[in-house]
Amino acid sequence: MNEVYKVTRDKYLIIKHGALGDILQGLDAFESLRKSFPLANLTLLTSPAFASLANLMPYFDSIIIDERKPFYYFRKTYQIRNHFRKNWTAVIDLQCSKRTTAYFDWFYKRGGGNWYGTAKECSHPMPDFTNVNNRDRMLEAVKMAGASEFKAELSWLVKDSKMVFKKFKLKKPYCVIIPGSSPQKPSKRWSAEKYANLSNSLYELGITPYLTGTKIERKIAMEVCANSRASEILVDNTSLQELAQIFTKAQFIVGNDTGPTFLAARIGAPTLMIMGDDTNPYISSPTGPATGIIYKANIQEITTQEVINKVQELGGFSPLK
Image (cartoon, rainbow, N blue to C red; front, top):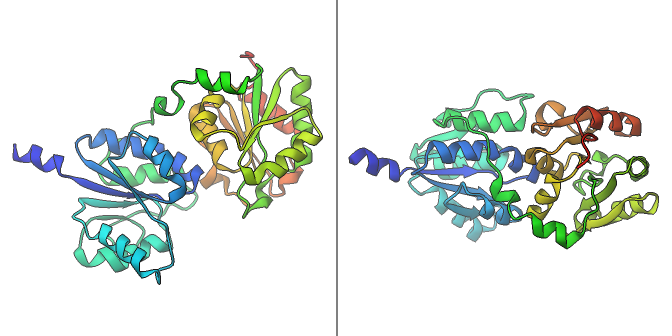
């Protein structure tokens, strides 16, 4: 009875601020924690941008929002400090950033608790993860904390998909193209001209290309549409959950190194990521059952035909859905 009581009180703080693609790569780690410690209290510390996604997930008992303000915002710093002063069974740092190292040094180290991460002098230092895929890195981290390995089951993300197809009136067969990326890294983008050429080729093959992206990516989507038969109906028009549901029926997805491309890969649709010198393919390749990459240091040297050939290898053209 005492052992059961102890297990029910185990409390884990998991740190994962972002970005979106990295959080999606962490789904297997989150599933592994939840299934390995079903009676434990799991709390996620994350950024405001990912609160809605975190609340959809079936893994966490509570969410702490960290605005990551400069440390001279004393009120916010005090609030974060108080979270780390709680009696955690362990803190599992999946972010491993300078900020989380500061959290360990300033708020946690003195208490001598269990900390899994890369902070110097932490109780459970992670091994060298140089050139290890982010999905595998996070999974190994939770296994260090005693979790067994499980693959994420994503029915919570793609359920009730009928309404989304009724809402957008998508023409089958269709594919999804993701021409944008982080505004801080426009160099990660294959050009609008090349995406337009790809869209025209796919349309001639009888597949309707739909573009997706956020509001700040509308300009590049409009450039693609102006020179192709692609539709921008999905740009700034879907929730993450709706986008996941759309991916389930797509012939395939082609995109840059950006969050939605990782989402498509995790859903299980044939997914191709186009990469240039700004992306380390060893660390940042998406993971999924039908996922591939094309990497060239100069991303603009990747040709339309290379993309079509790779999509064919991934099974994106047959059978037509």
